[in-house]
Amino acid sequence: MSIDILQAILIGVVYYLGFNGTPWLTNLGATIANRPLIAGTMVGFILGDPVTGCIIGAAINLPYLAYISAGGTVPMDPGLAGTVGTALAMAAGASPQVAVSLAVPIGLLGTILFTLRMTVDIAFVHMADRAAEEGNWKKVIFFNVVPPQLFLAFICIVPVALGVYFGADLMTNFIAMLSGTPLHVLTVIGGVLPALGIAMNLRAILNKYILLFFLIGFIFQVYLHLPIITISVLGFIIAVLYTELSVKAGVN
Image (tube, rainbow, N blue to C red; front, side, top):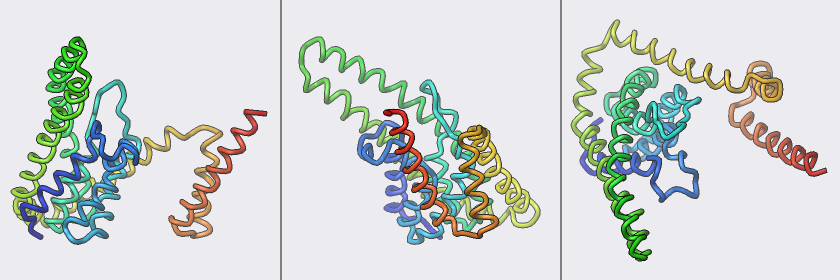
């Protein structure tokens, strides 16, 4: 699959919309478009195959299940892994397991963009401070919104667009060269990485109050063979009821 320049730019826009600090999807949650599952599906729509994009994005999402950014640090960038990883994997016709192996190192590169953005934005903060000292609130709003977003759009869209546009053919040739044992190794590694994300998530929920709900879901899937969508809906209903009862118990 080839990626044309318009598709490459749109994929860059997907990454920009999911970058932490963009205001356009705030009502949907700051990290929704940043998740590889969502970003991969959006990339799939752009490339004309949303189902494959969703499958690859879901696979890439697994290692990032326990992802958290604390104290202003970003150890990895799931949004970059989801957008670029899905695009290059779809272009190369790679399996979801191989896509995970390729996407995780890409996600580490996102820390560079985050550091660059935070460093340059300091200049805009000082401009806003000077405007505040002058009592010019229009300039304060301007320097807090317009220049930072233009710069962020530039460092997000341009590198990603160039990467997926020029990297699609390279990735296709790379996957072809790895056919055989090297590709099998990548597939095995890609199968292990999601297990790491799940294990980290399980570590966070291993307490007597939350583990019970996990065991209920496990029983539903393994022994009752319920579809994962059905289990998700049941889990949502149980969560709402549990929250409502907990709030009422606390009030009374």
